[in-house]
Length: 396
Image (cartoon, rainbow, N blue to C red; front, side):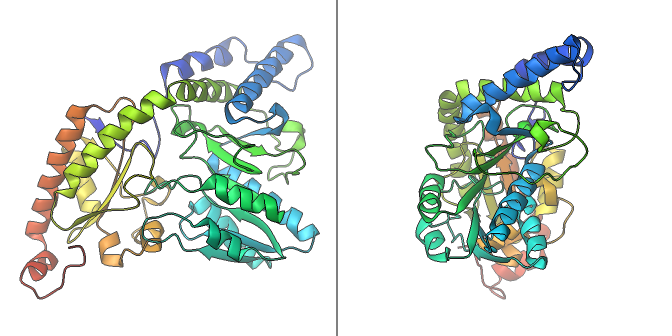
């Protein structure tokens, strides 16, 4: 048996997405920039995909730029807003301590270029407070960037309230919606979003395709030079097969969103309830205001890497956090941001569900995690010291 519970890292490409992609590999394979009719048919398909995606997030087609994925979109959005601010003498950016590294690393580079960055606390429940965003905005603030939903602990942020504050203050607002797209409603107008990033492979589309939405009147600074593609905002021949797959996958996800939310949330809550029965375990992030398919736990007295390897032996694909940092031995910056001590953050497990997850798989996973945690604790000298009272339990 193989149980795939790492859908926050990537998802299985849907049949609809695959079927949408196939003609653009060997039939309509023209370059959208070519002037002859074969190329213009490709351009028509590109235009169609742009319009369909724009309709799904409630914006205009010309506000959509195709990219290689969420990381590129985050980089371009933040650098563009920073350049807009710099031209006005505004060099202050507000973000949070638990953003994706595509955001955090870009902000760190901007600090070396003379920008100042305020990283707001997200508190133990993993949620940003709009009033703290408002209090941090000053006369030199050019951008607020807050993710829609966290990639590790799944908590959903008050995006509409933050967007409203930014709009009233005249500050650009960017949200990394990579984990939210296809799983939560997106309306960039209603939510007062100026810049938004998404990535196809998080909602059953192909890897290597993403979107950067930029509100009309917000000029983008190209990261890639060399051609006039994407109206001069991103050079390079568009990945038409992947873009067509992305459009189909997002349409399918949005059409089935309500039903998927209800079913997956029920399985998520069963999983949370089952894992909560393991002694000295704790759920990371708010129990209710979280993505339908996200479950993140810490278990005291174990190492997350050992937990993952033993779960793999039992056929369960899981992670300890972001796939982008899976090779790092450092504890998750997200867990540290919500106040987990280093020794607790090391014992983390992230399980992320999809439409294909079954109740049988959830029950098997609950039992498997309980068995593996018990086995690892039985070998741990730290656990013996905790049980003997030489050390104090952090998780009660």
